[in-house]
Amino acid sequence: MVGLVELDPPYDLETDMKLEREQPRHETVMDVTAERIARVYALAFIEVVAKSPDGGSLVEEVVSLVNDVLDKFPQLEATLRSALVSHEEKEQLLDRLLGQRASSEVVNFLKVLSRHGRLELLRPIARILKKLHAQRSGLTEVELRVAMPLDEAVLNEIQETLRKALRAEPMMHVVVDPSLIAGMMIRVGDRVYDSSISTQLEHARRHMIDLVVDRIETEPERFVLA
Image (cartoon, rainbow, N blue to C red; front, side, top):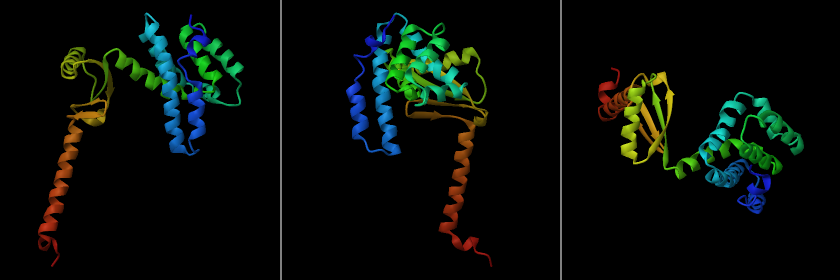
């Protein structure tokens, strides 16, 4: 069982406080500061993950807490984020709701966040944590957006093709988007490969408009009413 004290050394509380003191109080800088602080906590927890024989499941627990709990119960998230609710009350709530359902490592990590008043950073922490774990595991996150559900054979073929192209193990996230009409869109990091019919139609539409505009500009006399 990982105790609260064991999580503290990787976490730089002085850096946390210094970041807040040094930054002007306006929204854009606050967002950047929150992201940096969230990364500090994510790095602290990824060290716990690295020491666990089943570290991947710990990451999934944190991600699932956001996707499967906070997304479905916004009032719970509001309570955990509220400055009007004391750390002791939040700790009791975490024990009551997650004590028998989540691992001790995750519950203790949440208590660390609560003690430092950082539970509102759980969403960016989960996102950064997932990315850090993928990087350390030699995995590459891939979003595959398709117009309709794919059968397992086709999905496996796409995954194998990506595995060879990326020279890494793709973590596939399949999203069904009927607006694509047909084809698919693949996002790997900042790169997007789009072969969807909707995009091709949009390109054709824009090309047609560009041709008309170009024609008007080069031969205006043909478009002047007599």
